Structures are given as C-alpha cells and as structure tokens.
Image 1: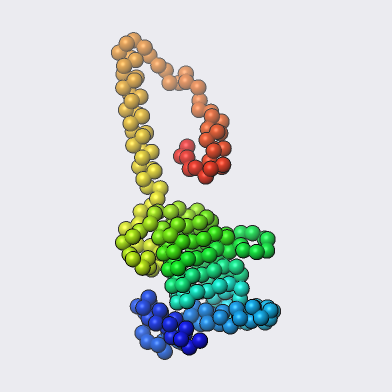
Image 2: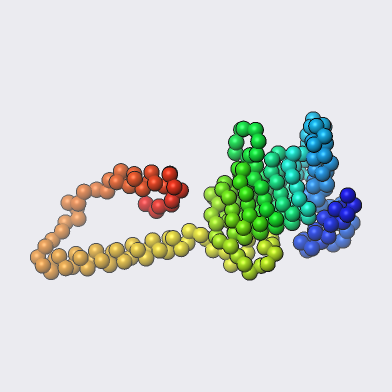
Length: 252
C-alpha cells in the first residue's frame, strides 16, 4: 500500500510543475486523495459492502469534488489534476499512467446492466471538460482535447478534438504520448482542410461556368439564369440517407 502511495506522489512531482514537495502533494492534491479513497471503497464493493462503499464515496465527493464509483477500475500512477467535477462511472476502466483534468466525465450511454462506460488504455490524457461517453476503448497514448465529446472508439496514439470528437491522427513526436490537457500549439482544426478543398472547388466551378457562359454568348446563345428551376433540396436526400447509414459527412 505505501509503495503505491510513494509511486503516486512521484508521478505527481513528475507531471505537475506546481507540485513543490511531498508534503504539498499529500495535503493539497484532492485528485490524489480521491484515488486513495477509491481503493478502499473498491475493496468494500468487492466484499459486497456496497451501501457502505457508496456512502463513503459520497463523502469523498463532497470533500474532494471528485466522484469515482467504487466499481470503477483505476490503474497505477493515474493523475487527476485539479479534480473538481471529475465523474468516473461504475464500469469505467482507467489504465496505468493516465491523466485526467478537471470536469472530465467517463460516462455511460445505456440503461442496461453490464459494461456501459469507457475503457482508457495506458498513458491516455483527457483534457479539461472532456466527455467520454459509452462502452468503447480509447487506445494507449491517445489524447482527448479539452471539452471534446467522444462517443466512439479512439485509435492508439490519436488526438481527438471537437463535438462530436474528431480524430486528428496519431502523433509520434512524443514517445510517452503525454501532452498537458491533451493538446499542443501545433494542432489544427480537422474541418479546415475540408473547407479549403470546398472553397477551391467552388472557385474552379465558377471559373468554368464563366468560360461556358462566354463561349455560349460568342456563339449567339444567351442563357437567362432567371429561367432555371430553383434547387430542389429533395435531390440531396439519397446523400443524407447515406450519411445516416455510414456516418459520412457532406457539406450542402
């Protein structure tokens, strides 16, 4: 037990530059205190003393601002930084060396019994305010940006941002995969390339239309655009149906 406590303290001193010394970590890190109490309530939960486990976890939530269900599985060297508003559900699993910031929710989207909360692999970083909802796996070394809402599986080493969460791709520049709050200054909006491509296509289409109009006029043909039928959005319904079936994004 004391070996695990020393390991947790060393982990905080390594990953939080605000941590000054061992006494500071012991007394002023509610996220760490919540994890230590959860080890006790988890044992009570396994011993079928479930009312007592939930009652104690309620007091720990009041004291630390962190709610960890006694049934959750928490790995080694997990850091909950700041901690206020963190919620970890009953069937959630948090792997070794994960870092969770304030306001993170590992929640369930099903009312059925059984596995309904996410599983975080090793070394996952979940930024402030992020919501990871559902029974799926977040791969080792993945990073979830602040305020992202993740509702589907995340590949190992990937970075996820936005609502709903969008995968930016794996980043191999950092071997340990750790980035504070799950973001860095080099990250780009995942929609930017799509929007840039769309604008290029519109520009090219306009140029071709002007060339076509000029060619028609040079041959004595005039086209009055006011006589063209208005756009019927029902023509796009097959694309919308395909979006619903396959999760393909279209810009209309």
